[in-house]
Length: 363
Picture 1 (cartoon, rainbow, N blue to C red):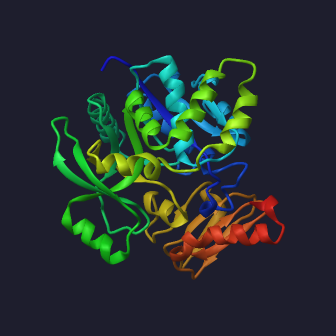
Picture 2: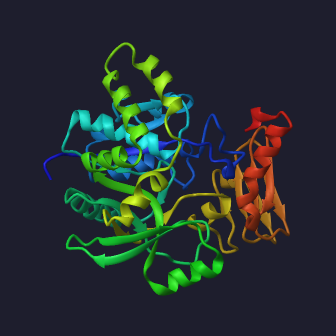
């Protein structure tokens, strides 16, 4: 591989399923959620230091979060924090980073790693990324797939094909989030991995696919890049960005590329979770003998005859639970959430209800 490796961290969204801690102005990736003193985005950068230099890391984020990202990541150069004018899903965000990296290093390999994932086994993660880099250097668009531990219906799946010399496998197709029965069949077959939304590729190979499949997106990005170092950059961004296709990398590029045999996957198991909701977070954190998990200050939480609770004491109040089973309690200074753990996926509906009531300031 002649070029360097450049990690890209898309850091967008508001994490509505982790409300009321995660808000539009301070989303989940800016919080300490895994029991340590590092936020999710800081942990992401920390584990990528083993495969690249901090100065080669890029972050793509919104204007509302750029300042907080810069404060939390002083090792990432300010010029590598790319501010998108508005959300356009992962396709434009990742493709813009690819185009900017290509200007710096035409032979570069880049990887995309979400800012809000949890990885417990960093050593295996690093080995997996290195395998992906070597596979990408051969011209493949590479996914990192998680070996399923259960028939999850909340993840997309990738069907694996033949083994490749680099240790990766060919990708036969991408599958949408399945029903429970279908997910069980996927796991039993041993042919499928979870789609973790982690990608590695040569920037020239990826941008060639963008140009072939999404010519409007490619043309717009080239206009933006031409003005990137000029005083009119913001003007061009404001003009071009809202007209770009709003599409994910999976749907916009990877699915069709996989159908043509251009995609590979590196299956791995490294204690991964995308922290989609409070129940998912509880599943990856330490808990007491009764299965209770506390994020934050334990001395403000009292539990009696309570099991399976997920408690986040994020105000000055004491949180006391008596005779509770499998509940989520998130206490913040201006909002309190209480719900069953098995309905944690529905928390985003509360955010929508607040917006409809004119209480968007709480979201």
